[in-house]
Amino acid sequence: MKRITVLLADDHAVIREGLRALLEIEGDFEVIGEAADGLQAVKLAKELCPAVVVMDIAMPQLNGLEATRRILEQVSPPPKILILSAHADDAYVEQVIALGAAGYLVKQTSAQILAKAIREIHQGKVFYSPSIAKRLSGQQQELQRRTGRTKKFAVNLTSREREVLQLVAEGRANKEVASELEISVKTVEKHRQSVMRKLGLHDTAGLTRYAISAGIIESSVQSTIL
Image (cartoon, rainbow, N blue to C red; front, side):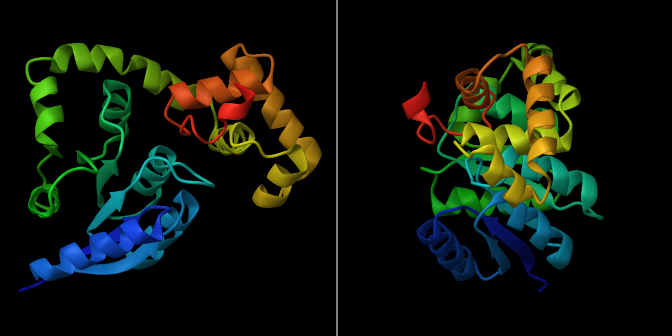
């Protein structure tokens, strides 16, 4: 029997190790790679071409939502993306649906449900944690209308601007951002000003609040400047 190849993306090694152990017990999964941040997830997805990517949302360098968008755009054939997150509020779920991920599970889910979710999305279905599925039931029209804000965010900011936004919101100085992205400080400042102009913001605190509300970073990353 051909096993389902899986890439795990989570910035906590203990979670990746636990997920690997749970999946390997099932027998029909093969974990072919692990990523500790969003950039690494995109890189490994391109190199390994997994059937399914189990993706956390809050990761350094590049958050799971942006990593999902890039993987679905840049990897051919695109893998099925299963979001596995500690967050279960509608704002995150809406963004996942808008991006095209195939499923969303909360991290409190059981090993059996995780395995079932991977199998089902691998077959072309969608899968949500029972609590999320119940909440979404009968509300699909409303949900689609409310995803307009997320799509606007994706359209208004370029990929590079989203990278700069996340790193600035994580508390990185312009010089650090420039080094991380291998661009000049002047280019970082240009992108930063462009992001502020597009979002109607005027300071780093505003950028950070926006990044938190949009699910780009967690509030615990930069709570000191709020």
